[in-house]
Image (cartoon, rainbow over all chains, first blue to last red; front, side, top):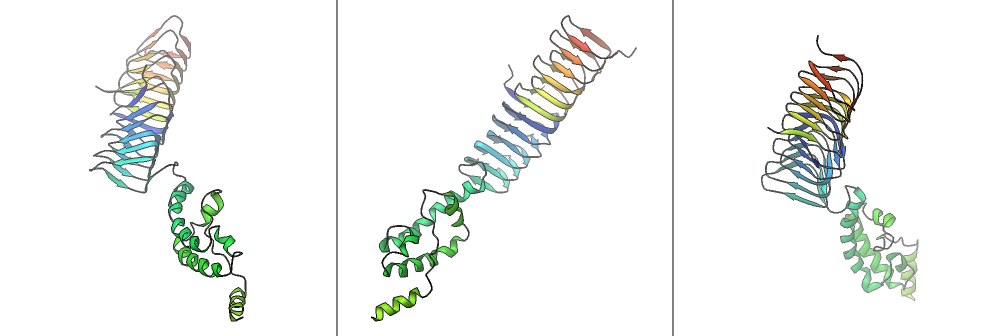
Length: 199
Length: 104
């Protein structure tokens, strides 16, 4: 009969709340909330630990991470100290947040966060070797001689700003853009090039 | 006045302290202390000591029940634990195992 669980205004829960139903918190909860349904924290609600659910609507105070599998909505009067992760996040004017806010797919997995960020970066790198040689930069080393000279230079310029992110797609993206690894020039390759040009 | 409703799909592991009525359909493990009435519906599983005002029990309770008012065990109730109340009714069909202390 009662589909929605209501933790009333005068109620204090010191412990974990888990379940498959939806939850409305008007009182205090000093423990993790991990439900499969929606969670609504009312204006008088106070949660002292992480909250995870499908759709979180917050009007009260939360000291902990918020993790919505569908959306997180922080309305006016919300006070959140902690990270907020959900595919869709809405922060209304008047809501207070202090923490890491991350939208997008993936439930806060760092790899999922790195992937969309890195995808944007390789495209300018791809543009550089394109006029030189269409296939992967690694293959460019074996391609006609003029190409290795231009491609590595362009990559060398672009690689440092990306830092460690190229390592992630190299390991985890099988069909994505080719790993923007700076192809190592064989020792004496430049010398051989100059020699050939001299001839 | 608002009341706390613990729905059927919810499990609470810990202490619950309420200033108001509590209606339990779900599962509670730990301790439940209410100031007012406590209703433990059929299907509820309470593995906790329950303290409160008037109580109506129709679910499964494993733990001591202390009431400042009355305790009604309805048919379908299954209580394993002591009951301390000033008034008590045990309906036909209720299962009960424990001491009864009526402050006599």
